[in-house]
Image (cartoon, rainbow, N blue to C red):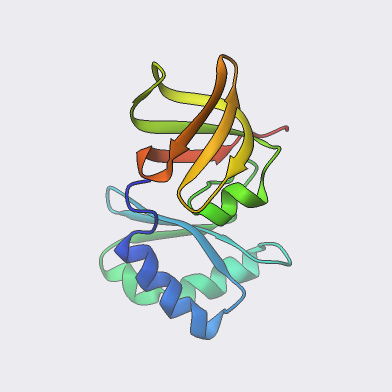
Length: 142
């Protein structure tokens, strides 16, 4: 993954830790002038939580349009513990460089460590270092 956690995401996580300690920042990404934040919470994500988180990050509106939302069915996987949590589920992974002829693949998460993830894809089982992953997410419906 680009850098498993970007500097911006680290900054946002630190800020929210003091005011919304149970909120997990799954992904903070900038797309053009929009800052997109995908969050999770043990009790789920609702509109009130998204509004509170937006309020805590109000000063980011000087630089960005701010979008805060739940991870949805195609939840992003950005940290080693995400892969571990969803072992047995299917994921779609986009790679920085081709691995076994693939730049992207979809398969079952069958193993995860602090340094890599193992995926059972249609044409075999591959172990991929996290630094080779550009983006990955769960496949809805599985």
